[in-house]
Length: 274
Ligand code: ADP
Image 1 (tube, rainbow, N blue to C red):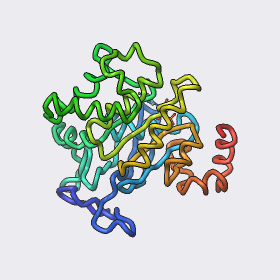
Image 2 (tube, rainbow, N blue to C red):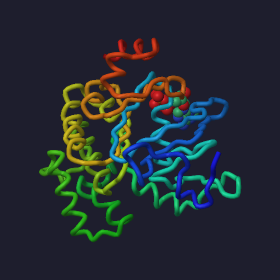
Image 3 (cartoon, rainbow, N blue to C red):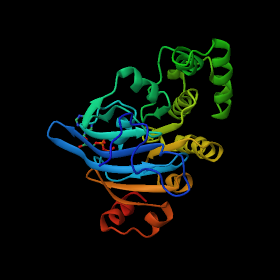
Image 4 (cartoon, protein in one colour):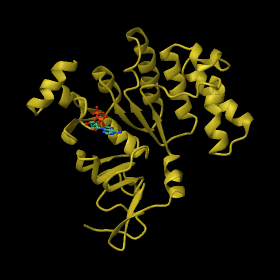
C-alpha cells in the first residue's frame, strides 16, 4: 500500500472526470470498535466533491458512526479518513499510523457541517445568536457580517421572522431548519445529515426536506445523508450506499438500488421502509 509523508496526496483516489481533484471524503481501511463490538471493519469508499450520497441500511449497521467519525465526534480505531486528499485525524508517517495534532484536526473539521436528529441548538441563545456564534468565534467574522449572513440564511429556510426567538419557542421542524442554517453559516464544503427528520412529527417532515431539496439544487456542497425517507433520498442523491453489519452491501444510483436491488437483504430492507 503506498504511503505519503505529508498525506497530501491520497493514494489511488480520483476517478475519471475528476482529474486533479481528490475525493471530498475517502475512507481507507477504516475500522471502528466500541469495546468488543466491531462496528466498521476494513471500510473503503470515496465521495467525490459535490456528490450527494445517501447511506441506507438497518438500524445498527454503522451509518451514524460513519458521519460521527467524519465529524471527529468518534475516533477511529484503525485506518484513515481523508478530506479533500489530506488526512483528517491520522496519517501514515515513516510507515507508522500517527495521530495529527488537534489543531490540524480542527482546521479540517471547520470545512464540515453536521445536522443532528435532535437539532442540538444552544437553548440559551436566540436563533440569530445560534447562527453567528461559530462564524464569529471560529472564523473571526465581525458581528455585523455574521448577522447579515445569518439573516440571509434564515430567509432561505423560511424563518426570517424568528431571529430573536429562543429555540424552545419553535416547532421541531423550525428548530431543525435553524440547525440547517447554522451549519450553512460556516460555509461547509461537506454537510453531514444524520436522520434529520426522525425526531419530527410527520406533518413537519416535508418543510425540512423541502429546504434540503432546494439546497441540494442550489449548491455544490458535498452531502452525506443518513435517512429513512427513501423518496427524499431518490430526489437529492446521485448515489446510495446500502450498509449491513458495517459493510457496504450495494453502492449505485438510487434508481438502480431502489428498483433493482442486487441483494435479497437490500430488497427486504427496502420493502420494510418503502
Ligand atoms: P446506524 O446509524 O446504522 O443505526 P450506528 O452507527 O448508530 O448504526 O451504530 C452501529 C453500532 O455501534 C451499534 O451496534 C451501536 O450499538 C454501536 N454504537 C454506536 N455508538 C456507540 C457508543 N457510543 N458506544 C457503544 N456502542 C455504540
